[in-house]
Image 1 (cartoon, rainbow, N blue to C red):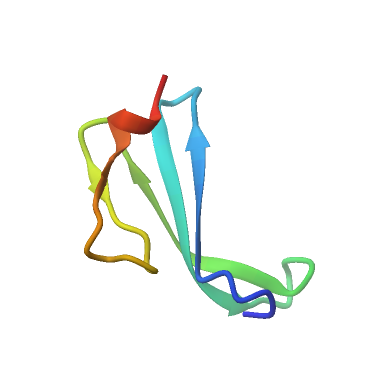
Image 2: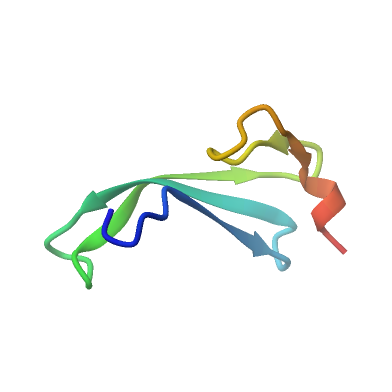
Length: 65
């Protein structure tokens, strides 16, 4: 976890979901030698919380246009 980013969220407008990438791991086949071991997709009716504030849920629909 070189940069210290434990999770990042990608707002996928084409599919209407948020893709949450977590669990950074070393990887010999993914430049620059890091990848995220877990990727979850959340639809418009789902709720998700960032690792930094697990008590604060966000409804995905609130982030979509």
